[in-house]
Length: 480
Image (cartoon, rainbow, N blue to C red):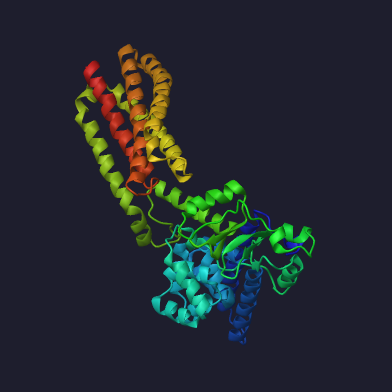
């Protein structure tokens, strides 16, 4: 890539705007030509159509597959499929890997079996394993038969590991060398490659049975005497490696902690079977982050922004149903104190404050706990310590902010008793929020669930109903 073609962070938006502009112009011009009554109208219309298609295709050919994927996700279905048809067939596989799961499904539905097979055959075994769940079984069968024995074995291995394991992320494209050769021999060996595998910062040193003996960094390879043997130049100690059954979360933390670019993946006998790269880890972190954001909002999966109404409804209904139940419970709590509210109208104005502050505090707590769990910083044994700490924070906030709200309530309504009830209710609801913010994610972790799923929905429901009950209950006992 030349300096003038170098991408900047905002270029992708520019690419999107250019494609959208070309699509709009294509529609307008073709509509005008179609309406004209002229000699050889069909020929002229065909020429104009081909000219615009060629211009748009030229623009797409210059873009990275990830940029095309971004553009496809940002276009409505009709334009998306129009652009997808213009993409060169040999790039289909790369783009399908880059688009979101929801958009990938819509693109695959429009492709013929032979097109899907051709796209799949351009991918490596680890990439094919990522795409396999979305491909029709008959297509996967044909692709599998087309692979050589090594490719079949690699594909079986990649698909056999759990989704969030190192084995599911690793790739098989790597460079290995023996320890008894000189660095000059290694350099001559590397020059035979047309290109090195992406993110190659080290070579894996193995014996005749593929056991990992050490790593040879490219730095060591280049700065040492070419006559030196690999055994003398390689690193033997503190080699960071992973097994395919290791948690991908743990591997991601190791990559961040040790600033890794790549690392070997070995089996239990220390045989090198693949490698993990920073690109794989970054993709995993991004997907996990997106999934966590969606789960906090109660969404089950990533959603195509232009999906049909029915698809969106199916994705969103579950936690909306939960919200409906919790909202009904909150309304029944308020209904139980209708008489108190009628006698003291100020309660209706003040009770949303108690519930709102409690919900915000609970979401802060649950966010911190979920993050700590994701970072591997929290074990089950830490629950009691975390509870004490969060209760302390809630007590402090209850005294300070509850006291301030109590004074304001006293000033607004001229009732010291109402102010005292406001302070007490605020403190108790913050204590409830703190306890729930610790218990909910820790309990879900103990039961083997995802601590992030629906956490904010549950904490808000609890602090709303609990806040109303505490405030109105205290008011009924001490003010009426």
